[in-house]
Length: 201
Image (cartoon, rainbow, N blue to C red):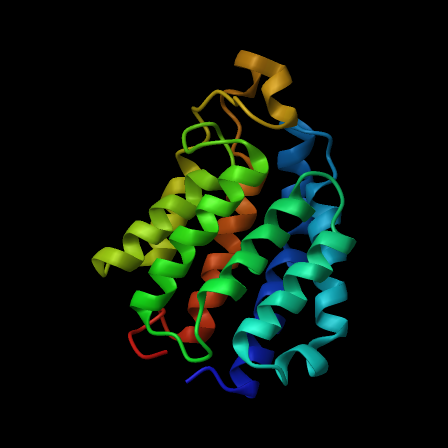
């Protein structure tokens, strides 16, 4: 059961992950992007955290919609629309008290929405390279955190095809994608609160 206390804890965990790793995300983005990913994600989740009381009191779909709307408005660059789209799509797909199967199905739908918004696919050195393996882990019963962390590491040898990093061509090889890293951090934060995302919440 994802009650109000758990929703509050989820928001606090996600915000702590982004605020606490802002410098790391900035350094990753300075290597292959425009250097603002950490600051943008920090700003967005600080805004979500500031509204925690209001958001956590809402049913889960409405809470996700509020988070997505805030991220679209507060996070600059490409990350705001993409993470906002992810949250808004999850809001449409998830019931108020989701099972692990519900999470897997909803994440697949949200991934499709992010692909459409970013005009990108897996393998192009983006957050999708983490989200797809996480969805597969949820479906198969594997550990989504291990899947996310391994997938973020796997972006290091990839050549960026989409986003600002694509302008670097081969010079993007050898660096972890900042969006993949922030996605993995968020997955770990969520799993930490949901107890490994067990069946039945």
